[in-house]
Length: 83
Image 1 (cartoon, helix red, strand yellow):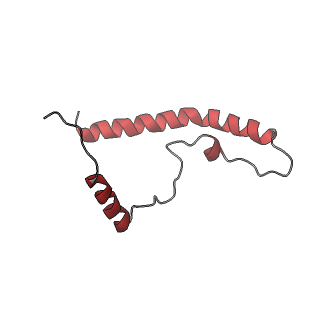
Image 2 (cartoon, rainbow, N blue to C red):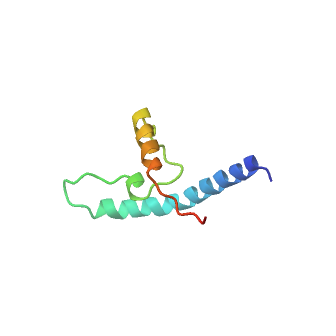
Image 3 (tube, rainbow, N blue to C red):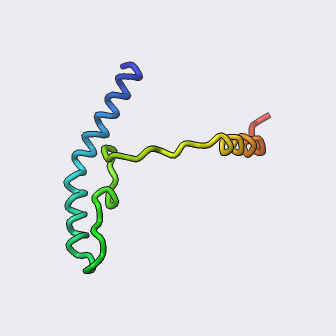
């Protein structure tokens, strides 16, 4: 198998697993929402059990300043190697 084929197989596995857990997530959400206090806001299934297939917002990327700080921080690491 090539790396691309392995990647496709892994993504397929993650999707199948997410579909299998969808029912469990909905049952848990129903139980939580049925027993919540009056006046409290309902719980979303994504909050109870996030799945791979959930729509995610745009990820926050690292800024250039944060990257430079990380580079400087890494320079201070003393690696333990056998010499």
